[in-house]
Each structure stands twice: as structure tokens, then as C-alpha cells.
Amino acid sequence: MSAADRLIYLNKSMYENVSNYIRLDYARLLYEESLLQKNDSTEAEAVFMLAKHFYMINNDSMRYWIGKAVPLYRRIGRFEDLCRMKAWDIYTITSEGKKKEALRAIEDLKALSRELPFPEGMEMADMALANFYFSQNMPADAEEISLDVLHRMEERDAPAIKRYNVIRQLFTNVQDSVRFVYLEKAEDLLRDCKERGMTHLDAESPIFALEYTLHRYYIRGNILKKNAEEAWKHFQIVERIAEENNITHSYMMNFHYMNYYKLTGDYKKALGYADLLEETFRERRNQISGLNVTLKDKAFFLDTLGRSREAYLVMEEVHSLQDTLSRNDFDKTLAEMRTKHEVEKLEIESRQMEAKEQHDLLLLPFLYAGALLLLVVLIVLVYMAYDSHKKRKGIKAAKEKAEEIDLLKTAFLSRINNEIRNPLNVIVGFSDLLIDEEEPAIRLQYAKIIEDSNDSLQQLIANVLDVSKIESGSMTLFLSEQDIPAVLTDIYMEIKPLLPENVDLIPDAFPALKMQIDRNRLPQIIRILLRNAIKFTKQGSIRFGYAIEKEQVRFYVEDTGTGVTEDLQEILFDRFARIVRGEGKTGLGLAIAQGLVKLMGGEIWVESVPGKGSSFFFTIPFPVGENM
Image (tube, one colour):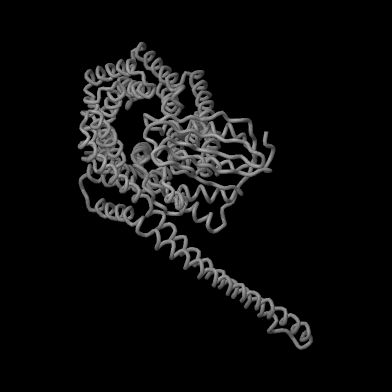
């Protein structure tokens, strides 16, 4: 086979193989062969496929290949794919929670699109910005930007796949109240493409596959709206598309069927789909949270069907899984705190060395002063001796403080060590297995287990850092005037989708109120209390709101859940208190809430009757701005 034929063969094989791992092997071979033959075109194809493979799987690897692509794509004028890969990077930065870096990368992409010039790159940057706003719970801004991009695309008659991708980002992220508007818009676009004789929007997007996904969203939305009749119509469409195109349903269809029969009250059929989902999650072994949710539903179906003993046994396993999930939340924090601790010790040592060097440098010139400057030298030496004494005292005080901090951190780490050992063992153990495993499917499973363990630690990491800041007095509030009804409305829209089926979230009337508050910390307290209420309320309602009093504002969250006994109320806000209430446990959240309220100058307390519910209250004092 000639050199040119090798490139053609590798490039064709790379695109024809469906298996991601086989395709990855061909992409690597094509890249190496392209470098040998100095063929920019096929090198660009290989780099694009390699970056695409690692997108959202291994961000560091993806960024490595994007770095390879930048000079190459500039040189050959492949601007669209260059901007697309830059947009991928922004999406991953956003998913990592790096706000400033994401906004900076968006501006960089806009600057790049102006420089090339490539106007469509501006649209990609705007869509990345819309995704960022969605991630920050700013749906109105995200929707406005997305619709503006869609309008620009329609004006220039952009390819259907690009318009569809904008609409897809809308119907997968907007609130339930407007989701159907964009589902219908996507359906109209696909219908228009079919009427024009199109079968694909691009090489990887057959219209039937997009319709299949679209109607699954219709099913989900109608089930959430409790519209069983409309949901069933879309079930029939999905089944027809699957049969005509030989599509194998994913486990999500079983999930939709289970929820449909749960909605219609056919618990026997719902139980059958719960069994299928349980089997799927047990085979995957890395879907603990999915198994946990399924088993809760299964226990409900069994109990409703009069099989209480079986329901009890299933709920015992649910409790065990919840313990596992809570223990899987800490190890990454421990590792980061150990690293931070070592860095702080090194910084102190470095400052000591710098102070000593500075002292020596200041002293040297005067050692060579002549006799004529003896008086001046003596005065300076006295000053320097005094200054040196002050520095030594400062260094000694810094050392003592560092040692004290070291003891405190060691005690803190020892205290939480048992809570966070298991996740680290999971990550380390499966990382070792991943290195030695050759079977691609099993490697993917191991990687998913590691990824899930890392993800599950993120919230607990934030909690530990908040507790640490509060206790050390380094927590800072950034005050600005905020419209409190608007803040609580945003929280309501964010929390509402998290509710169990039999629980209502009721926002009381919000009287007009503007306060100087920290825009992040006050909502954080309310979210902690609402999520805590959701954990322990299986049916009934959760109410929240506030009352304006003479010298303060009193916020409250009331639930009809399991309640807390008087003896447990005394330690409810203690750090690391783990109090069983029904199916949930308190962790660091209430301790953080208490610390933030005290930082704002207020108080927090609970009133509860076991079996009837709990009411959490906290106050924020005036004067902190205009109260009306």
C-alpha cells in the first residue's frame, strides 16, 4: 500500500467505525502517519476526532489536542472547526464550575472570531454564554441570547443542524412552563426538513433519531405535567420509530414507562419496570444513586400492592445505599486540604528565609562603612537591630501561629478521616484496576465509577471549605441591594423540580422588601433549609417565606415531615451532627446555615413536633438598607 493510500485507508476507517475505542485507535494511527508524511489535511482530521473523543470524558486530553489544532487550523484556514473546539472547551470549563475562566474563554472566542474573521464563531461564543447562564440558574438571560442566535441563523439560512442544536439547548434547559414551545419548534424544523426530502441533518444526525429523542422529551414533560393521555400518544410514536429503524431502547424508556404507570395508578406494571431498572443498575454497579431512586419507587409500589414485608426489605437496602452515598462524599476534600496545609507551611518557611536574606542584605553595606561615618553607622545599626528584633518576634509569632494552625488542622483532619476514607479508596482502587484492565467496556465502567466518586465529593468539598472559613473568621460577605421577593422566586424555580411526587412547595406571599445582603449567601441558607425539608418530607407540603418585623426580617421554612425530638434539636446545628430523621441525615448544611446567619448578625432555631413536621426560622436584623 502506498503512503497516500495509507492515509486514505486510515481516514476512511476512522469515520466508518462505530465503536468509539476502535475509532480512537484509527485516529491516533492517522495522526502519526500524517506527521510522517507532513499532510496537514489528514492531520487536521485526526486531531479533530481525538479532541471530539475526549470532549466531556477527559478534559485535559481534549485541551491537549485543541492546543495541537490551533496553529494547524489557522494555517490551513479551518476556522469553523477551530471555533467549535474552542466552544467545547468553554462548555467543559463551565461544567467544572470555573466561572471567571469560562467568561474569559468566551471573550477570547469572540476576539478570535473577529480576528480570523469568522462571524459564525461569534454565534458559537454566544451559545456558550447561554449555556453558562443556564448553569448559573439565569434562564431568562440564556433564553434571550439563544433566541437572538437562532434569529441570526434563520436570517442567513444556516444549516438545519445548527438551528436544531440551538433549539435543543433551549428545550433541554428551560423551565417546564416553556419547554413545550421549543419542543414544538424543533418538531416543526424536522418536519420541514423531511418535506424537503432530507433524511439527515448531518452525517451523524439522521432525522428519525432526532425525532425519537424529541418525543422522549415530550413523554417526560407530559408525565411531569401529569398529562397521561398526551404522554401515551408520544409513547406510541417512539415505539413506532424504534420498530421502523431498529432502535434499541435505553434504560431511560423503562424509567419513563415506570413513571407513566405510577402516574396512572397501575402499580403492578410500574413494579415490572422498576424490576427492569433495578437489574440494569445492578449490572452497571456504578449507578448507586439510580439504584437508590429505583428501589424507593419499588418499595412504594410493593407497599401499595399490599406486599409490605417485601417493601420493608427493599427500604432497608435503600437506607444502606444512602449511607454509602453519604460516605462517598469527602476524600477529595481531604486530599486538597492536606495539600493546602503543606503549601501554607512551605509559604511560612519561604517568608522566614526571605526575611533573613533581606536582613543580611541590609546589614552588609554598613559593615564596610568608614571611620568618618562611624556615628551614622552606629545609629543605623541600632535601628537595624531594633528592626531585626521586631522581625524575629514577627517570625516567631508567625511560627507559633502556624504550629497552632497545624495542630488545629491535624485535629480537624483526624475528626473527619473516617467519614472520607471510603471515597478515596474507591478512586484509588478503581484507578489501579483501570490501568491494568484491557477490556474497553470494563475500563469505561471503571472510569465512570471514578468520575461518579469525584462528582459526589464536590458538594461536600464546598461545605467543608465553608465551615472552615466560618470557623476561622475568613468568611467575607459582599453586600448589595437585592429585591428579596425576586431572590426567593428564583430559589423556588430552582428547588421545585427536586420535589418528590407527593410533596408540594408553597411560597407564601412575599411582601415588598429590599435589603443589603450577600446575593449568594442568603439564598444558600434558604436552599439548605429547603433541601433539608425535602429530605424528610415524603408527603404533604413545604412552605417558605418571610415576615418583616420591627428591627429585623424573619425567614422561615416549614414542612410536614418526620419532625425532630427535643433532645435532638439541641445538637441539630452542631458540625458533623448525623441525626436520623426518617430516610435522611443532617450533615454540614445546617452548621453552615447557622454560621452564615451569625455572620449576618442574626439567629437561627427550629421548632418541631415529631411526626407532624418542623419549622426552621432565622432572622436578619435591620438597619441594613431600606426595608420597603
